[in-house]
Length: 233
Image 1 (cartoon, helix red, strand yellow):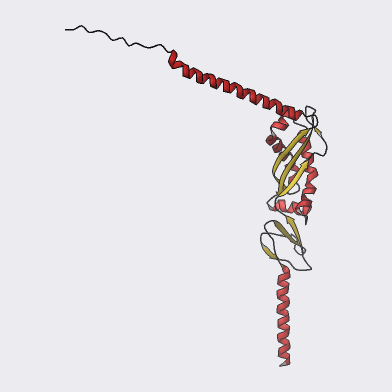
Image 2 (image 1 turned 45 degrees about the vertical axis):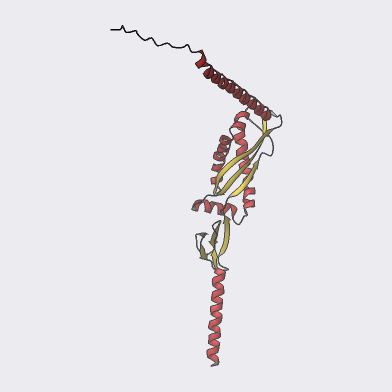
């Protein structure tokens, strides 16, 4: 009887240990992270939005953040344009790990177990350098008036470097462009004056057309219709 009881105890302990092992071994990756399990197999196993098992003490679990990250890009010093005007530019880029196996593999080499803030800090210098290069190819007017074109050029320039790190640039928005000489303000004032002038001319033309349409019926000569006189029979 005692031996049978001891057997039950051993079986019970084994079941409890097995359940604890399953709890410790099972991991589930959320959609915003890639879980990378390595140690025993030659190629690491990658879990994204799914569950899997790792063997404690023999396999390690690492993480790569897959969500969208905001990177502030600012020219630390003024950058000269092609017409030799020193400007300061503030921009914001949205990036993420390239959503494919190669992108995850490259990102795991460069940003393993990093927080979004740490990843943004790692990429900031590279993005700033690319933006400074594009500024040097544009004049002040095009830089200030065609910001969409400017941001597209920054994205195209930076994407080549980012792809090597497993990063994809989602968007780049130019927030502010300033210069110490106030030339951008003068350009804005000139543009505003031109718009007002054009609007004034268009309004004068419209008022003239309305007056012409009102006066035309009164100035038109009266038309008499000639009716032949028939002789009476």
